[in-house]
Length: 124
Image (cartoon, rainbow, N blue to C red; front, side, top):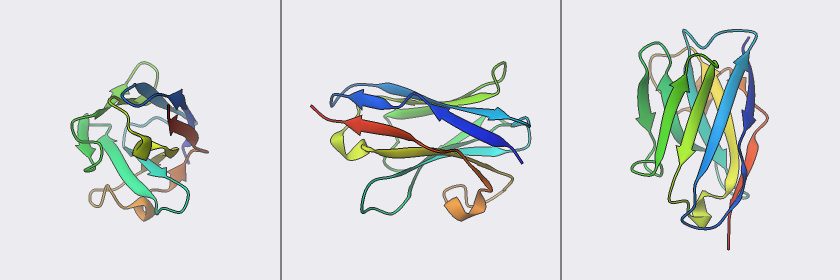
């Protein structure tokens, strides 16, 4: 019931940074968990990070720890994913997802709403 639009993808060199944004329309994120997943060609969908909007509580997948930061922007009804120290292995389509869930934040099947994805390419 919430519509999601991702933005911010692009081409960056290894070691660079990007900020992805996920903006909701039609509903507030107030009761939602908002997650970021990524999928590279030939790879399974991978959990990146999630945030529980109501408590502003983040959770990170192993690949994101120490490099990525997920944060909410209440005024813009937006969740941002700041990605630093990017590696070629980070190349993927990144998807924003939202759902109402208490457990299993890294399980994509638990999210009911998905954006269209934004391409991140890390290459020299």
